Image 1 (cartoon, rainbow, N blue to C red):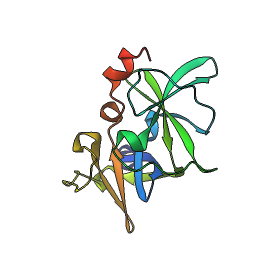
Image 2 (cartoon, rainbow, N blue to C red; image 1 turned 180 degrees about the vertical axis):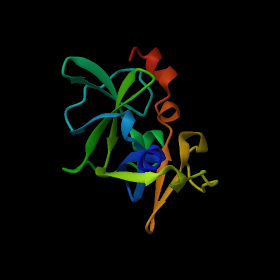
Image 3 (cartoon, rainbow, N blue to C red; image 1 turned 90 degrees about the vertical axis):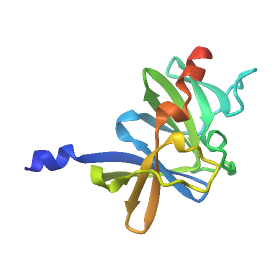
Image 4 (tube, rainbow, N blue to C red; image 1 turned 60 degrees about the horizontal axis):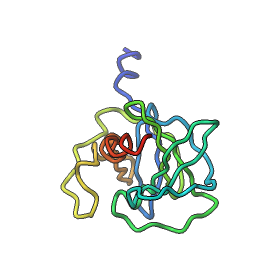
Amino acid sequence: MAEEARAEEIQLVVFSLGREEFAVEVTQVREIMRMEEITRMPKSPSFVEGIINLRGQIIAVVELAKRLNLETGERSGDTRIIVVEAEDIKVGMIVDSVSEVLRVGAEAVEPSPTLATDISSAFLLGVVKKDNRLIILLDLTKVLSLEEMASLGF
């Protein structure tokens, strides 16, 4: 019985962009790192901030707020790069802060309502209700535009 309960749980890395909370599945996160110098890439999409050298591997870094059509905040000591992997492509995502790893039952993820925001519903897997919070669960394969990243050579 305990094994069945564990199978129905998911773990999420929760982070903020402005006043909103977002999450991705912990299985897609490879690393969370402090902000570092990013080398700009000419002719890349506007949401691609540039590239970094991560222990000998070059990875693209995206400004997640720009990708989601949100206002970008000022960078601070809390700003992080979440290195994620989806479909064998590693990408860094700049976020305002990372708050926690949250364990929730799979039933806590509800379908995305039609949101009155600029965030494309194609980017969303659902919404997690936790206490008095609403946490938006992102679909990394859509957010990161993997075809676009692959065409850039990442």
